[in-house]
Length: 280
Image (cartoon, one colour):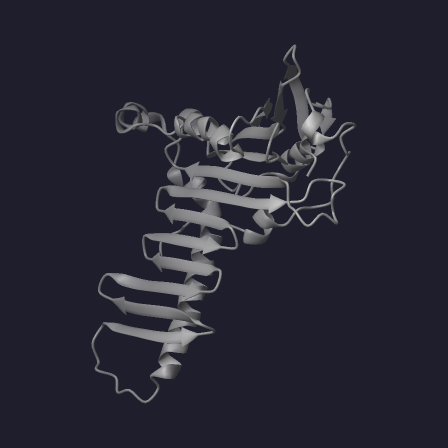
C-alpha cells in the first residue's frame, strides 16, 4: 500500500493538562491573552484590538491566533477559515507553473508511512478473521480472494486481487475503508480522507467548559482541521486550525501553517495557546 498520512487518533482526541487559566470566563473574553513566549512559539505581533496575534516557531511554522464571534453556530463561524485554508492548495495551473522549483515530494510524505502501516495492519487483521471463518474452504489457486465476517455487531469485508488489497471495517463507532491508493477513516469523532497527495483531517467534540466539570451539559467544543498536502503554496506541508471555546462564542482559533511534512497533528504549543484563551 502506498504511503498515507499518519494520524494519531489519541493525539487528536486527548487533551493534556490545561495551562494558565484565563482571568475571565470564556464567554466574557473580549481580548486575547498573547504571551511573548510559549514553548517553541515566539510572539511576532498583536493587533490593536487584541483580537489577533501572530507567532512563529523555531521550525518556521506560522500561527495566527484569532478571537472570532459566533452569530449562529460555531461550525458556521469556522467555515470562512476553512475556505481560507483551502485557498492554500495550488490549482493545476499554479502547480504546473511551479513544478520545476518544487522539492522532492518524498519529504512531504515522510510522515505517511505510519498511517499506511496502521491501515495495512487493520486490513491484515480483518483478513485473518475472514480466513479463520473460511478455514475449511479450498484454495482455488487464483489471485483473487475475499472474505466477509461479523465482528462485535459490525461487518468486516476484505479482499485482494490484481488491483491490490482492500478492507472495509464497520464496527460500532469505527468505520474504515482502505485500499492501495486511499483510506477513509471515521473513529470517535475523527474523520480522515487520505490518499497519495496527502490527507484532510477533521475532528470535533463537545466538551465541558473550565469550572463546569460537574455540569451535565457540555457547553463547549474543540475542533481540529488539517490539510496535509503535496500541493500547498509556498512550500507549506500542512495548514489547518485548532479551535475551542463556548459554543455560543467567542471562539479562539489558532490558524497554522507548518513547514515540515512529518507534522501529523497540531503541535502541543498551539493547543496550549488555544486552551489558555478558550476556557475549555
